[in-house]
Image 1 (cartoon, helix red, strand yellow):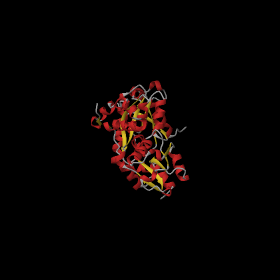
Image 2 (cartoon, one colour):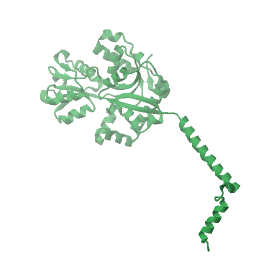
Image 3 (cartoon, rainbow, N blue to C red):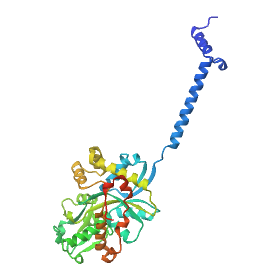
Image 4 (tube, rainbow, N blue to C red):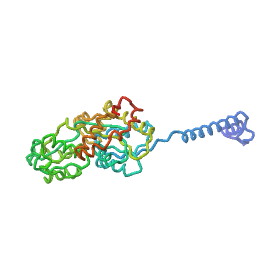
Length: 351
């Protein structure tokens, strides 16, 4: 009987390697396989130990809004700045900053963004919060949009009309300040407390003559009534601030330092990276020229200045009365600790 060559070769190879009788496997090969098995086991256990020991991202929830002035938050989440700082951030959107603040205050403690006006009201109500930083601001954030067919072309034309501003927001403060600035007796107008979406509907229907709004509602109103609206605005009258706030009694300096570090990184991205600005334009459905014009209005950088305290004092006097304003130390509601750890030069407070 003739055995095929390939079978002989296979048989010889099995005998040489000791595969026919594993207990007769050559010592060198056995040791090599044992060593390989040990190395694999060490690699697997080492990888598992690293996975178990590596720092877990810190979970953070921020009640906020889907407005252009929230760009640092949106960019930090989209481009990995929160993750790079060891955070797992959930952004919960609300219609306005006042609602975002209310949601955070209603819980056991967390973070929110809001303008200084609802913060002023919360301070007057002795609620528990601390402002960590102003993360965005603009002197061009609010406008009074008025129907031309109601005869409103200049400030004096507002007298005798029905207007709208959301109570408790900076729109309410701006509208009332504008009336005083222009010498219009508030008793000659009616101011309705309307949500921005409702105010736009009422403008379209003609049941109100003017509304104080901000982006993106300004663009929506113009799109709904193209060429039919006058814009009344005094840039020197008011500066719109967007503030990151901690609510509740507890504080976590490490988490807050990480948050502000991430937002500082995101702010630099917005300034320096055309791709980031292009993404923001797509995010808010803006043409390139609209995007550039809008972003040029904003200062994005975590900072704290004494102007924030003065703004809350002014707003308290106008909206709540001088007696109430004098009883509140608004600087007590500012906590600069985390921002000092990130960028001491960004803090300019009088203590």
